Amino acid sequence: MAGGWSRDGAVQDQIDASVGDAVKLARSRLPDGESLTHCEECEAAIPEARRKAVPGVRLCVRCQSVFEKQQTAQTLFNRRGSKDSQLK
Image 1: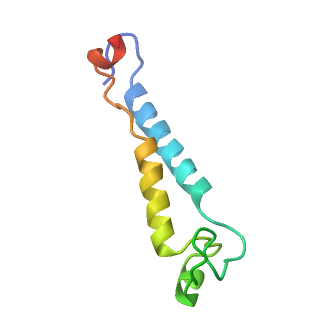
Image 2: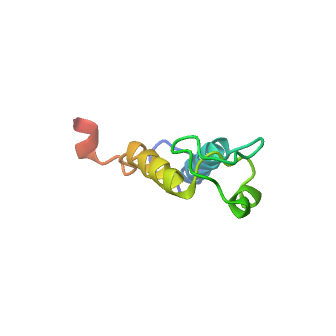
Image 3: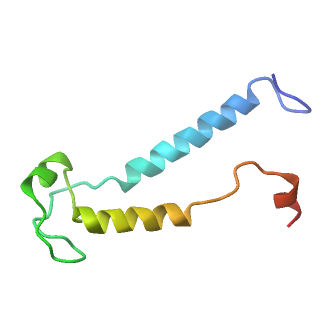
């Protein structure tokens, strides 16, 4: 049920588009190509099990964790679109 000037199903279309964008972003961040034997950042050896589990891996687990924390901190935003956020 849509309200105002929007058509029926518009809210679901927006949800689907948001999920689709998130999936596309996640896929673009996946490594590809040949795995490295040593981390790009710290030169630590990457275990063979990790190289087999994640094709195209370029970072060790520790550096990957740091990288992912930096990524999530940069992508935070207000999804609610409250009046307060629109007025600022």
